[in-house]
Image (cartoon, rainbow, N blue to C red; front, side):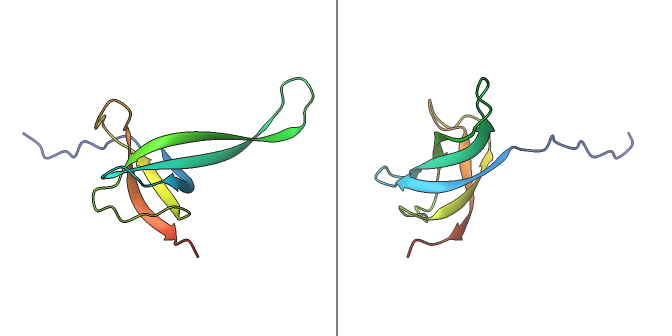
Length: 89
């Protein structure tokens, strides 16, 4: 057999702010994106919350974090913490 490496697809990445860290090994991250209103054409901010797996309980409320898509870890968690970009002041 020839040695070929199977390359995985690129994983989705998002950047957002931690809004809750009460749960054990789980944080909730709000990710904001800018989009155009379909009828009026005005640029608006749309936000979405993601449940993120944080194995070491490293992130705290207000931190700016980068998250990556992963296999389903639980009913709501399909993302994991990649890095803490900026700590809350």
